[in-house]
Amino acid sequence: MPSTSRTILIGGTLSAALTAPVMAAAAPATMDVTITIPQLKVAEYHRPYVAIWVEKAGAPAKTVAVWYDYDMKNNEGTKWLRDVRQWWRAAGRTMTFPANGITGATRAPGAQKISFSRAQLGATAAGEYTLVIEAAREVGGRELLRIPFTWPAKAGAGGRAAGKTELGAVTVAFR
Amino acid sequence: MKKQILGLVATVALAAMAVVPASAHRQWMMPSSTVLSGDDVWVTVDAAVSNDLFYFEHQPLRLDTMKAWAPDGTEVQLENKATGRYRSTFDVHLTQKGTYRIASVSDGLMGSYDLNGKTERLPRGTTAANLAERIPAGATNVKTAEANNRNEIFVTVGEPTTTLFKPVGKGIELVPVTHPNDLIAGEAATFQFLLDGKPAADLPVTVIPGGIRYRDQLGEQHLKTGADGKVEVTWPEAGMYWLNVTTPQAGEAAEGTPPPIARRASYVTTLEVLAP
Image 1 (tube, helix red, strand yellow):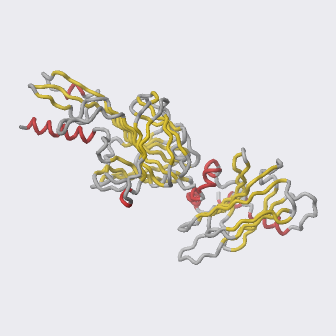
Image 2 (spheres, chains in turn yellow, purple):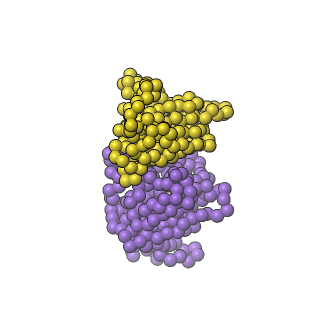
Image 3 (cartoon, chains in turn green, brown):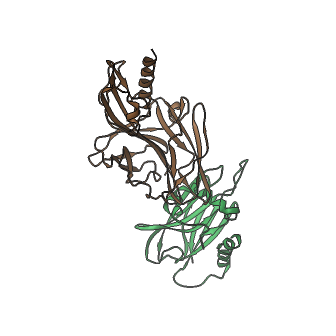
């Protein structure tokens, strides 16, 4: 089981995608997201669980990434997924874990990058979308940020939001 | 002498059984969680009868009739059961995905009979099955009325399911329009209540937020079911709420006399409302 869950991780392939040379294509096909996980001066620190999903009016929420303790024995890390409460209600509670292409390890404080293809985002249809980022930390708090975007997207910076407690700056760019 | 004491005991027992009259203590259950994730999860439940919600400070809720059912309808064993001075507690191992029901249901008979020129109350624990043996020879003017009491909670692992909401057709039952494990502060929730399997119109519904001990006002909502048995509740803030539905009380009994014998049914649940 642990080996299965490890092979489905997307973290590795994503950082590879990030470092790949930027295509000089006309229409962007990829969204790069940078999520700053704040360094917190607390006695007991645990990396936050983070869920990233896409909302579109009239469509079910589409989860694109969940960072959690996926490698605990007996899948025990899933016990706290419900603490990422808006995501849990919008999408998480109907999913099974680990989720192929979505499950990822928790990330350390600092700027964390992750990229999504247009297909991964479920944004094949042109229109208005919202990227939602929600973080919940054990013995800590919870915070949620929304960044609207449209598809087709323009290359370059595509939106930003800044958290106050559990999330730092989150930026979106298209390439 | 002995009979008189017994009669008194019966009256007191009856009063205690009477389904949550306005001035009585409140029965409640408090689960450790209602919305859960994971593959191997447990919920622990405190159960008590008290004035303040949700503080155990009066009597434990007895576990004699407490049961739990998994989403597929099978009965689940209650584990680590204990009854202390002020509360009972037990655990339920949640091995399936979906909504579990944990309930204490009692279907009894209240009533009285005349014997030797005196009116006696039927003792607590009288049911349709044991009524005959509880009425002494020579009793006349036997009056009975059903008393159905349901105290239940729901907990959900993963996606909420409605497999356990098929009405049994006895007493007051909840039919979800809004699922009881999908409640968010500021959002209106609608529940339908049935009495003996039929939509129960004009039943009083009382909703009280927990944490009474640390505030001045009770903050209760007094609602009424509509013609279709439905009631809409809006939760001012996140937290645990006590919800009680009863058949209307048939007038206040005079001081010192037992309440009139009339059909009674009561429903109690604890609802967790999450922050948006």
